[in-house]
Amino acid sequence: MMKNLLFISPPAFHVMAKPTGAACNLNCAYCFFLKKASLYPDSTFHMSDEVHDAYITQLFEAHRTPRITVAWQGGEPTLMGLGFFKRSVEFQKQQAKPGTVIENTFQTNGILVDDEWCRFFHDNNFLVGLSLDGPRELHDIYRQDKGGQGTFERVMKTVRLLQKHKVEFNILCTVNSKNADYPLAVYRFFRDVARTPYIQFIPIVERDNETGYQEGNQVTDRSVRPKQYGRFLTEIFDEWVSRDVGQTFVLNFDGALAGWLDMAGTVCIFGPTCGLGMALEDNGDLYSCDHFVEPKHFLGNILTTPMAEIIGSDRQRKFGQDKWDTLPSVCRECDFLFACNGECPKNRFVETSDGEPGLNYLCEGYKFFFQHADHSMKIMAALLRQGGRAEDIMKLGNHKNIEGVNAKPAKLGRNDPCYCGSGQKLKNCHGKYIMNA
Image (cartoon, rainbow, N blue to C red; front, side):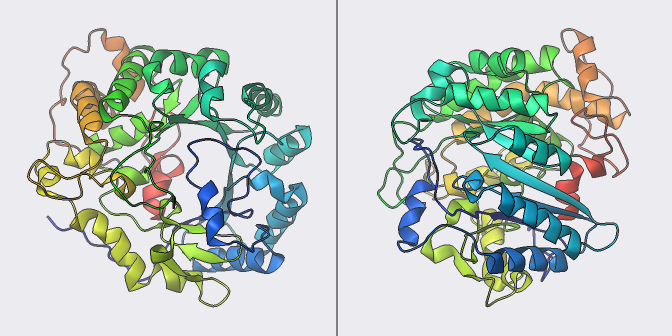
């Protein structure tokens, strides 16, 4: 089966802007982006008004959807200072067409966030992503400041500030070789101590090289092992599916469930193709993806070439289509292709048993998790097809069979309740990501 990108310039896309480039006030051991500073040895890592205005103007002009996401990441974006983002919000309002819904997302380590930042986030409806790797003894192993000191207490202070000011935020937790051995301790800490209902787990797969590029087939000791990651997801899933569905939202599980509903791609790593999420450096340079900020994936500069032209280029379309076209035969024949689609291209550097390239490093772990979760995923998908809610699975005790469990995955309508159990319509929740793209 062939899956094509049927567009020249897409109606919507995602650009992860890095206003401070690779500059950061921490020295997290596994951070792949710190090495990117070598690409710009003379840079001040400070986005100019000219680049900012070009980014916002072109982003808004190119979108043909009523919702636009302005994404900020780093490095550490708070190093730009609050004034930069106050100006940006006002400029966005000037550029927006009538009826446009603007969403700003902001990924931060939380160290510089204070009451003033939190008031700004709340008043301007920012969705904040906060990096936290679990309880102190696990978080502080790799997430340290420039002086080698752990950052747990400072990040937890930010958690409470965000909650105090009612800022919408998610936890982004990396899964590495250390904390992966304590899945329930990590999950229960977020749920019961940090009291954060939105969690995303990001596996650390760090190539062992000096460049920081996606090259070589060896990983560092910090990287999570495939089966270790599968067990991590599985143990958390069992607790989540028995008591927390609809109360705690784990993006990894929501994204997987979408596959059982024939909607794989609400999370980009599980989509059959990619190429709709690019990375913008502070000087206006645009790259194919945040994970591929390296010379061979440089696309151009938005001060000289319009953003829409770059993303609609044959080169970027090929980058996205290659995710599907380079799948090894073992993946195409896998029972869980519908949910996984080979996962992220950055992790596909292993050879199959037949010597075919392109197998995902985490394949063993994902297959372990998908096999384990399959029956529960089918039940939740069946409940949703029948007009119920995913969390109704918790009323079934030992997950007795219900009508439609083995039915073929069926797409939900845009006005149906979102499969994640949030209570929002699909078009306003997880569905907006694939509908926009």
